[in-house]
Image 1: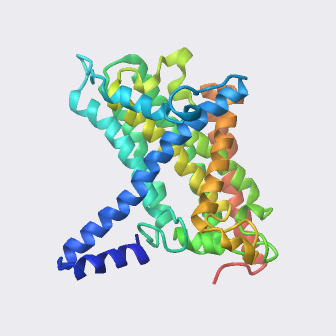
Image 2: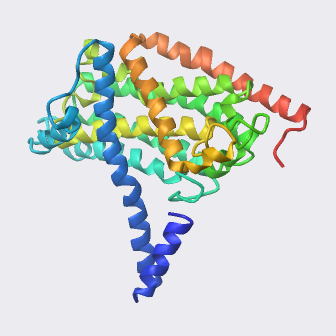
Image 3: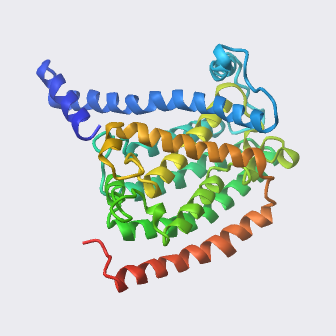
Length: 357
């Protein structure tokens, strides 16, 4: 990781006699695994948590057989799909068909490179971290489109068309929402955005969401994040009543599991972005010295967990939107409001001299 981890590991490997290039490479790979492996474990756990929330909402017990309290259910499901045969439809484009889930899964992991877990624990502390997130999230739609086209089947193809339209529609408003955050923070660097929220309101509250001007944008970003990750009530791409299983219809075994993992990794990423951009990231909610005794990464995990609970709650309670309602919300409501809010935010910052130096 940039900072203490990557530098320290590189120096340690050099002390063991390895050349600088190999030391840097091994340290970087170690940093990537230090994020990717816990993330995969977190995905397994939140799938379990997701199912428990749905069960509680429906007055059921949920997973409760495999392992204590059903905690190992996700691992049992993973083992089951791992041992199954990968079936490729006769009319499918085999190469693209197998490549699509790999793209979805890889892109879902790549975005985590710029998420700050505390002041120093960040894999790539680049100056344009927010632009990197936008670029990576735009790439995610390729996995869906390729899956829909290469399956050579009607339902996946319709699903892929919906997914591309949906993701493009909401990325526009997400872009304008992020501009409002950048105008306040004065930087695209993710760590800088978090530090800009320190004592933002009255020197006591850490988070742009406590700002009356940015709170509406925080709510819109949360809803747009649900649409971007194709979660209920915006899961039009997987509408079982219309499209069987959407673009995943023809997939089985590990290729299907990669979509499953990629989808939940993207949901976790959106929860992390909500926490980092609007709710102070790894900072405690209040600027009190006693709260800094709790490590920053733990504050971030608590916030991600709370946002994921909101995602699960919405999925269990809110009915699915119709496709025309989804498009109308994106183009006729979110886009004009977010565009107007950029102008309003810029006007307020210039008028009161609050522009970051």
